[in-house]
Length: 175
Length: 150
Image (cartoon, rainbow over all chains, first blue to last red; front, side, top):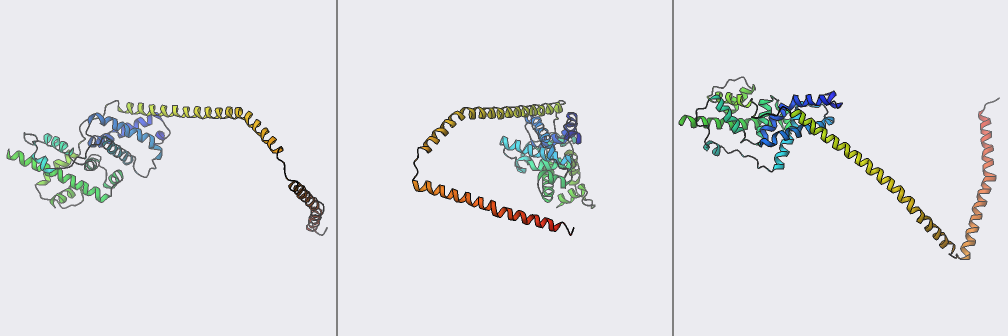
């Protein structure tokens, strides 16, 4: 970190390599357009490089970078004027899902597909909690939302997905 | 309510194991959520980031140089402009003094000006002759007094 702050070229490359997974997970979940994803990730690290001198070590570096990634992804969506994806269980359960049995791989693909239908906040919360294993307190710092709200976001998002899976399993059993 | 109980148990928030058919579904859901989204960044991603940062930094350096050059140009321009316009300013000052000379003042005003100037000069002279030497003498006495009995 000191080397990065001192402007050492190689040190920042190491930082990018260390956190590109975290950034890409968050950005890839929020930004659906594949052609924009890498550019948004680049924007995140350019911002990190620019703002690194303002990092005050009050939080973990991962939390701070996640916050920049989340805000950059949201700004990208706002700039693109993409309408927020609203969850509609009726619509989802009536859609034709995979015709074959719900095997594990297919189920995971199904869940990842349905994840795209959740709101940006829900996708981000799920990614940070389950994939990055970030505690709720840190997620609230990243997303600037109270811890209680993060917990209810988590619960609501997982319940929605559970209902989708159950509906799909029932549909497969009937077929 | 059972959703909440299962989620709390899976998150480790409670020790009461839920006996629900949805538990298996939730287990699969948690496994899926722990997987990274599709797609990955290219191998050249760090290099691309560094190239962008270098480009931005060189742009800002060029901006700095342009700003310094603009400042220098403005300073040189200002000096040249002052030198050029000074000729006209001296001409204008000369013409203004001629205008002042040509003004005829009333005789009363001139005599009053001389009178008050003379009074002020006299006052300063009196102060210089009588007040200042007395205060100097007082200072000398006080210095002697503070020097002690010897």
